[in-house]
Image 1: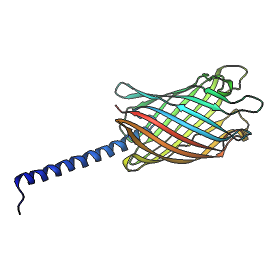
Image 2 (image 1 turned 60 degrees about the vertical axis):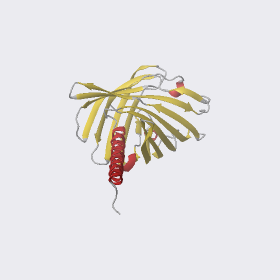
Image 3 (image 1 turned 135 degrees about the vertical axis):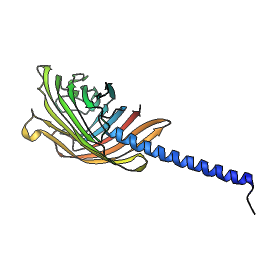
Length: 272
């Protein structure tokens, strides 16, 4: 029995609606993937507010648990048509377990660490940034900070080709002022990172933070974590959020350093 004109129109309308929904789903998935790559790029032109929780197990002689919450706002600025300035600031909020003979349990702010990257405003897959980094003695207790002003150079290189985002961030800071009774600072940091982006905003990630305290004895100098994890772009209403969970075992660390770390991050993204 032939379909009526109204039935045929209804079928056409239904097919059109389903096609629009499929296109919207595809666009949504594509936007999640693009947001994931921007969130993984330390010098992307993207405002973000990460809250990074680092739970460190096996700290000190009592194998205690330390908690460090890093509040890390990232704010980019355009400097004309050719350059961007990306500001990255780390404010640690620390729960420090008791250190025998020195202090009891302590909770408060650590030292503020702002970094300024000057980066070419290029749309290519490979980009870089250089600039100064600083360490400000903002800790609310001696055991939570260094008591010194410090500064040094920082650099980052990033490749965002295909589903991969990988590169490395490095810096070194030296103290130049502060409490004369506190130890001088000569500290190196390197954070290699590699991310493989899957569908629907999921990704695999590894971003260990390797450090060296050049002022320490040679056998107490390095911290070298090994590990990784996974992440996903979510939406709370219309607000995109990057979430990730990672675990690291310290293959090398000072005697007082942690044995392993769980890192959980919630990063609010504000695309332009």
